[in-house]
Each structure stands twice: as structure tokens, then as C-alpha cells.
Image (tube, rainbow, N blue to C red):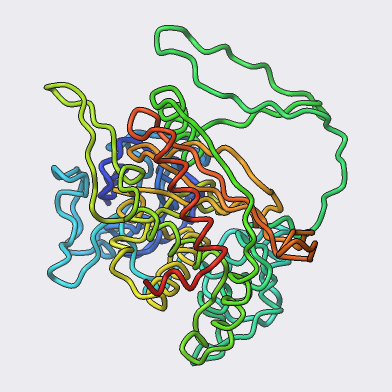
Length: 455
């Protein structure tokens, strides 16, 4: 018998570390090639790592919740002479790309380690006992694969209440997401009760490398404080926000808008056969308004670049429209590439796909790169306005507040109208006050009169 050591591979994102989220196997479990060993979280995504060999799990070298470097050993597997796969290496090393040196290639139909099998390979390993939360979400008698059950738990969906559409009567990913969309995860569905803990401490930064971090004593039962480690998406987000806030001089402007005609247009689009299979919301009109306004004030879509020969402003003649999304994994900002080339229906479809992918936790690093301007829809939280922080690499971000009925003066008379607030933050190195004000005014004018888009 031989013992093989599996090291943490580079999953193709150019990252140097990852967190061990959950082990799918334990010591003594039997695994086959391509069985999922562990789920890891990088700064960008969740990834299931399959086994490149068959055998019996020996030792888990890293605990759940720990962060390890790419190339570090994480698990050992002992292969019996008669059970080992002929193609399995005796010891697993890393290629220059971080994958095992002798791992199967994609060209022969096998699976590259770090990318999973799409749920097509069934595991013969023992299944860990479900937690209380899993037992509630699983719902006895519901047919659903483990990734679908996990998605349901993340979105707070009771599988027993989901209508299954799979060919064998199983609940699919689309079924769960569709059910979750009826009660958006971006809202507080109910107000939680006050707990016994009055304060919660979340570290804002880690200690410098030259200064040893203090070792905290074990917290006694019923302690009034809790410390949460900053890692994964939260770590990446905090780093990006600090970089943006302290490198770009932010200036914010805002204006109130009569969005009654936008609401009327949304209602008509929802009733239109052309949009019957697409979710339509005021965000669609807001997105189109931003794209239209960028054409009139291109500098809000530009970028400040510090080059070897000095700083320069890069004006971009295309719009990769970012949408800030609150997801179960934290804040993500995926973007719609070349949004200026899309029809209203195509843009609606792209926004729907972007939102659903973010909710599923499947947003790829590529979808979050090269954005040019961002929209944050704080209205879904019931907020009227805000001063958002610019996404790094961009010069503007626009916030859409909640749309609610308010008294509004129309032709000298006070009438109930659907009113919202459009706010924006801008990099004052790139754009001056007149430009940012003109841009926000243009966005507001589209929300007030969407017919201007016909131009």
C-alpha cells in the first residue's frame, strides 16, 4: 500500500491561499477518483476539489476554517495495491499551474483537479451526520443533490416548499433560485429578536507581519463578545474599499426624482409577451439610464491610472456595467460586459443572469473584473440615499434609493407620485463638479421620462 498526499492546487484564479470551508470526507472513508474531498473558499468563489486518486482517507492535515497556502498538503489517502487507479501517481506533486503533475488532462475527458465534475460522479464515501439546520432544509422525501441542498440552506429555502421540475422529480438549481427570488435574499424577511449580546467585535485589519498578533484566551461560555476572522470575500472587499477610499478623493451628489413614469413602464414591460420570461424591475430602467448618461458624460466612465511616466486618465468608450450584489458570501460586484450594445430585453436578461449567478455563489472572477462604472441598488434595503464608495479601477458609482409614494408638486398641485433619490460618488481627480452633476441630472431625467431612451 502507498500513501499519497494531496496539496492545495491553484484553482486557476492566480490566488495564493484559500480557506478550508468543509471536509466532505473523514479518516477511514473510502474515496474514488473524482469524489469531492473538500470545499474551499478563495477571495472570489467557492470551489469543490475532487480526488485525483482512489483509496482510504488517512489524515486531514488542515482543520475547517483554516486558511492555507497553495501547495500546502491538506489530506493523505492510502491506496490498496489492488484498488489504486493505474493512472494514479504514488505521490501527488504540483505542475507549474498548481494542479497535480500527473492529474488527468481536460483533453481526455477527465477532470482537472480543482474544477469538480458537475455533480455527475456519485461518491461511495460515508456521509457526515446532518446538522439540525440541514435536517430542516432537507425535508424528508425531497430528491435533491448535495450542492442543491447547500444552495437551499444558503438562501434560506425550505426544499419541501419548492416545486421540483427535474426529469426524475428532483429539485434543480433553477427551482431553488426561482423560489428564493420570490422573497429576495437581499431583504430582511423578518425582524430578528434582540439577543443577549449587546456588542459584536469584528477585526478591521490584521496585525503587521513584524508585530506578533496577540493570542486570545478561550472565550468563556456566555461571553458578551464574539470575534470573527476577516478572510475570503470579506477580506478582499475590505482591502478594496480601503484602497479606494484613501486613494481616490470621493465627492457625492444626489437629487430627488419623480419616477412615476418609470414605474408605469416597468408595469407595462411585465405585462408584455416579449418580457414574459424575464424579471423586470426599476433597476433595468436605471441601468439603461446610466448607460445613456455615460455617453453624454464619458469621464464618469474613465479611470485614473498611475503609470511609469506619470498619471493619466483612461477614457473608455464602452460600458462594463457593475451591479453591487449582497450575496450569502458577502458583497460582490459582477458586471455586464459591453452593456452599451444590448437591447432592453438583452440587458434585462443579462441583469437577471448576473443576479441569479451571484445568489448561487457562482460568480466567477472574470465576471468581477474590468468594470467601468457601478450601480448599487440600496433601495431594496429600504434606504433613500447614500454615499457609496467607488469600486477600485472606476471613477463613478450610482446609488438608486427606494421608490415610494410621496406628495409631489405637479403643475402647481400636490399629488401622490412615485419618488426616489439618485445619488452618486465620483473620483474628483477624473471628473469635476459640473460633469458629475450633469451625469446625475441625466440619469434622473431618464427615470422621470423613460421615453427619452427612444432617442
